[in-house]
Image 1 (cartoon, rainbow, N blue to C red):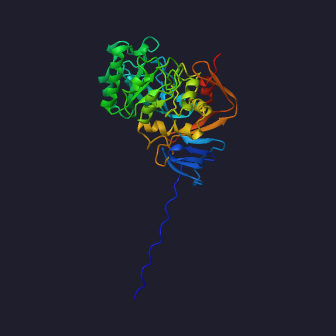
Image 2: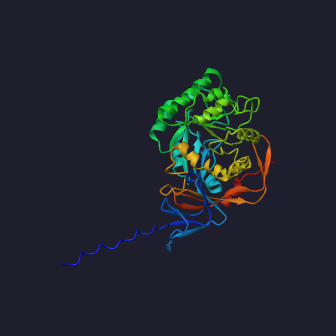
Image 3: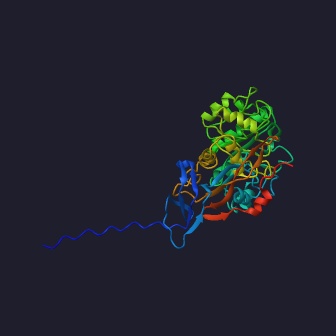
Length: 409
């Protein structure tokens, strides 16, 4: 009888071939609970693998990250990047190259009437990914140096904003309202606008970001109108009691703690007038931490008191948060707000190859809030490089010299 045919030898699985490998750095990826030295392999526009000794090929680019922190691409949930068309607008490419921000959310620079310009002239041309909140006001922030964008009721255009949000879901992700009495008025008019903005978000299946400060209603009253997933930005703003998160006794309003527990997102939104060291310190001491750390970076906050996202992150490390806690609030947490956890905010294999390289600059620095208070740090975080969708960029030192934080004169 013929001998039985032998089974074919198993074919070894092909070893992955990486276009880029980041090696020698400490990976901090809170979404995966990773905080250790690892390598990150990238293929095309995707994260391909994390491991200790990834296979190289002769054509693999190896990035030496010794002394660096490797994080998912930073996400800034609150910026203004419509330069030329709004007084607040700045260059999004420089925001990425100086601060390591690979995804940024333009917070209401455009409304229904000027959204096409923001989309065509900025969003579709920029190096970073730009997502947009559409303002309830048809003109967005085009006249923000001149007048409040909703003082005249005729400027509210929820129908036009809804068309943008329903037709441009890949780029337009939510609604923006600046709830200051100087921006939308007071009394019934203000309440109607708040409710129209909230209804717009509900009707379009999106979420609402509300800028607070000089609000025509108290914050406990305001949050009662919001739904889980909505965002309060400028959560550590100073100012009169009732218009900030602390009551007259310096305690966080119970209604705000309840709102956070129910899923309302409290975001830093530092800006030029919306972050106070003492307010933040008192709130954090009481366990009222921000879910998201954002900059509200714009023309008037660029040089100071913000500078960039890594400097804002440094402030919260000074306030007692750990490095992973801070990184989580600039990666996984904003990705969850955006509903894009599978794409951004993590180094999970298969996700977009957005990577930020951070380092500790061992130099002292004076870090200011928006009210003249300063705290000293003996070192600070800065961006050392950034990859966006598989394309590696070095830190732009020329832009840094122009735009990096400068203390008040």
